[in-house]
Amino acid sequence: MALIEEALKAELVASTPVNARLGGRIYPSDVAPQGTLSGGNPLEYLTYRQISGSPNGHQGGSGTIEEVNFTLTVFAATAKAASQIMELIRLRVDGFRGTIGS
Image (cartoon, rainbow, N blue to C red; front, top):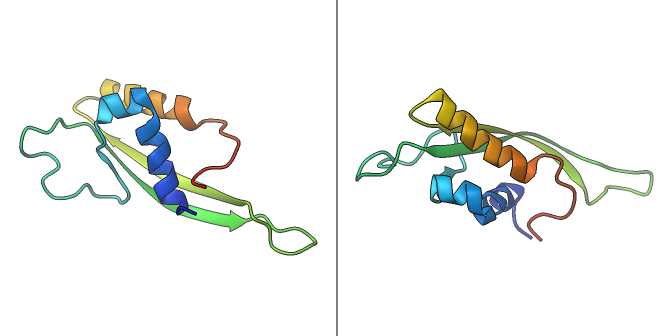
């Protein structure tokens, strides 16, 4: 089973609108790798990190479901461009129900 961070990235890369805009520039940390903005790469990219997590247990023992929260930070040349990217991401993950990364 994939780590939730890897599964989140896979979901975003699998989204045609998100991936078309970011071109795979989705990084699991607060800082993009060195060279992200060099070599003619566009300014737009996303960083993410898990900020909390809590397993959802029950009376029979520990559960297999975990609730997690992430911080997503979009970098773009303008606030409008960043907002457009965040809307694409929101449309992909907001209200998601199901199994991810299995």
